[in-house]
Length: 239
Image (cartoon, rainbow, N blue to C red; front, top):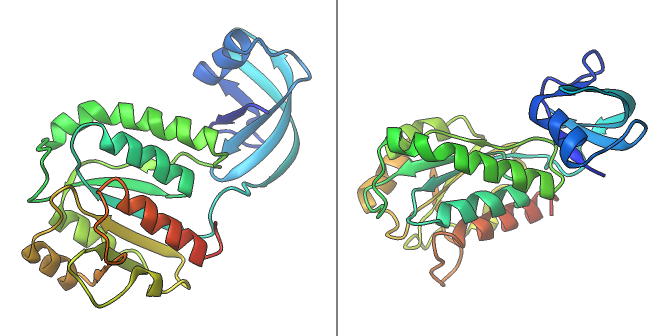
């Protein structure tokens, strides 16, 4: 069944317009009485088409329920900016695994050196990838792609999560699999190709971020977040 995202959709406002309406009416050539699912703020609305006009699709809501594909936890991934198209892969796969938001971070060892303004020009591309990944995986919302920030800014933001960790390959103390599975919100920071330098880890520790490791093998920057998310989702009963 086709799925569409529209956070303005509700029982009081059972309409789709603009791009969604054009996709239903012109691309899919759907007709009155056919079934669609509308996702709005984590709620799935099972609907049938009531009326199709040029710019608006009026729907009849048959059933509502929380989206079963949405995890019970909130996870924000703070990803140090990788080079080339690796961030596209990370966005796509982490959304399939259930991440809530992705925030790109410029760290000292990032090979890619974009300014915030330069990243903003690319952000619409990542948002399109996020939307497609959310639709493909049956998510109930589209995870946000944040603005490019510094490590210091990210460290302060991570304090808002109940549990905040940074993957640090030289840290031999805490295994990621030992991180608490009882929190409702998590912040996970992953480095770029060059990882982190000790001063950056000290900044994160000062903000309460816990360095953890994923084992003795060194994972690529595009592999590490997916491994971490898989472990976290499994341990919290979301995978």
